[in-house]
Image (tube, rainbow, N blue to C red; front, side, top):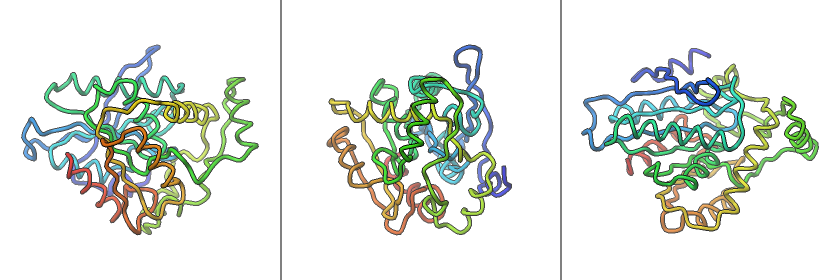
Length: 287
């Protein structure tokens, strides 16, 4: 990991925790514990962060430290096949089960601490799916540039490979449909960091694309209102997510429970620089 990623936020350091799952395997979680002095016990929350297609939990370091400084606990769960859990494989159901397992563990560890899910781009699919299945596990959803209706897509040939890889259980890797790092951010400090990040997932296993499709199909077909407050944050300059169609889908899902904020001059990744500060401030308004 480049020093810029690990050292960029030095206010509160992260640590690794491990959570047992099926077949003797463990999930690795990156955790920022809230500062004891910052918030009254009853006001502290746990924020569970679900990463995007290419990213991992360390990309959310500034957001994590900002929330931790105010007494909240931040748990970054890299989905199976990515980041700290790159060696694990799983289906859409496994992804949902992992999210719910982490939420249940956090609730059980401190019964007075509410749990909020943060889904960044592709991670929004797991966050919404988990909330649909067990809405009582979380207090609120927070979606950062939710990757539901997209402006980028796999080619026809790549989609065929996804189908072949899924049916034959072949570990075919397919390049991410994001064509250029500047689709993610124009922040000149972060562009070289994410460009050289060895944990970044540029080649994705075909079955992971299939799992993402399964989650999105389930979300689109869900006919009942999701009884959870949802804060959806969008970037006006997003070239990856189709904002109008995604907002329409979220409005159908959450109705009056939905709050939408859109940041001018922001790029897709609402984690870095000025956009990251705006996202943090918006989250703190409801935290």
